[in-house]
Each structure stands twice: as structure tokens, then as C-alpha cells.
Length: 378
Image: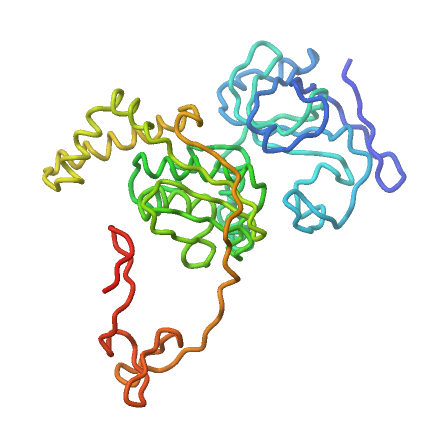
């Protein structure tokens, strides 16, 4: 016989809602929802409702409605996951007035009345009250606009989620949007930075509270900037021209972790992907490749990069805690009009001559220049 669930609502018992199944997994108490979404769970549908699963395997994704059965109370306004203060209806908190949750999951397999799913943020013993197929036509209507609206307030929300879930593949794919291609260096930057962000457990919003220090201006640094959110533009990225494949991530108090690439990391890669390194020398080092070489080089680069995501972390990197030398917050300088070109120039970059103010190009002054071979004085 189907079980009926009772819900408290303003001190009165609302209409009974039927329990149609139960969640089965290894989690007995509430944990980080990002961890739950990465694991597989089984929904055991009560035998009374098994016929309702007819042809459900034709749907790759399902929406599962369930009850937060261990949640005892709620707050209308309070801190949510990540520390941001929101109203309960503006969040996905499990502490809700009705204790009802809804999650979209991937259906991996059906065995009779059991559904093996991935992405369900519900613990063992959770009562399930409804299941229905996810429909892109119906459920994605307005979703893009909603996502854009959310990203306007939380620009790094998706990246933060990928980091928390340690979804290295999605991080590498999206890091490729700024790097333009996939290569071992980008993969190293993504892996090192995802590790550091999960270790330091800080949310980076580009306000100089989290600082990244890179020691070479190469492909790895793009992976660092993308994953950590520390960039030249928001002054949270420090560049030290050491020519080393290493990155340090630190809080403003200087307590940081340095990850450096092991000297022999390429040995296994060159053995398994000799074509990539042969083409690297031809296409990049010698600039002698033709169009076909260039295309193959990018293809092999992709294969190597994604393969590196599966490699043992310690085979790629060395790790140590450090006390980082962190500069003060970036100062704000006045702008001064160049007397020659009439363009605004940062006050610290003005050359004074014959009582006038001139920018470096107009005064033909020497200046620092960052190029592919590091910082040079021009």
C-alpha cells in the first residue's frame, strides 16, 4: 500500500501527498550538495507504482521531486551555501517551509522498479513523491534568460560549481574559450588551480582577497587565470618572471600553497603521444608546418590535454605550503593629460619634460614590455 506523507503548513495539516519511492545511496546525513550531485543513487519505486515507469528509459534526464525528511525548521532569510544571504525562495536550501526538493538527474539505467541516476542531491532514505521526464522544449523555456540574469549577479557561479565538483573536463573546456585551443600547458593550469581552489576554500570574486602568483607567461597561466578568477585586470594576479611552471594561491594574509610542475612530467606523455610532440617542434618551435600539420597538432593537443586530466596529480605536480609576499591593495592613481597626444595617462606613467607632461610614447621614454619571452625594457 502506498504511504502518505504529512506536511505541516501554518500549524495545519495539508492534503496528504503520496510517497512513490525511496532514495538509496551511501549518505546517511546531509553533505555538500556538490558531492551528492557527483555520485550515483538508486531510486527504488514502490511496487504499487512500478507500471508508471513504462518507457521511462526513453528519457535521458528526469526531474525528481522529493521530501527533505530530516529538515526540522527553516529561515526565511539567512546565509546560504557559499555564505551569501538570501531568502529561502531565492535559494535551493533544504530548509524550506514545505520541505520539498526538486532536482534534474541523469538516468543511467533501469532495472525493474529501480532507477540508477546521477545528480540527485538527496540522501539515503529520502522519500520520493514524483518523477517525470525532463523536457528541453518545456523546461528550458526562459532558462537561458534566467541563467543570464543569475550570472549578472554571480558571474563565476558556474566556474565555482565546476571547481567544487572537481569537474576538470568542464573547466578545461571553458578555459579553452579564452586560450583558443587545448594543450598540455592549459591542462596543467586548470588542474593545479582546481586543486588550489579546493584546498584554500575561498570564493574568488576578483576583489584581491584571493591572490594568484604565476612564474611564467605561458599557456599554464591562462588556465590559472580562468579557474582562480585572478587576472591582470583585477590586480589579483602577480607575475614573477622566473620562467617556471608554478603557481601559488594565497589569501591576503599570505598563507598560501605553491604547486610546481614536476620536471619529468613529460616523459610519459612523450611516450604515449609522440605525434603531438613531433608536431609541436614542427608547428610551434620551427614554425614550419603546413595547414594539415596545424590541424593535426590541434587535434593531438586536445587528446593530450584531456588525457592529462586523468593522470595522478602527484605525477604531475609538487606541493608545499608557503608564506607568500602579498602586495597592498592596488592603488588608484589620478589621470593626467599628455600635452602631446592629448590622451589620459596614469600619473605614475607620466614623463615630465620642459614643464610639460608626456606619455612614454610621446616622450620616447624607456618602459617595461611583457612579450612571449618575459618582461623586457624597451
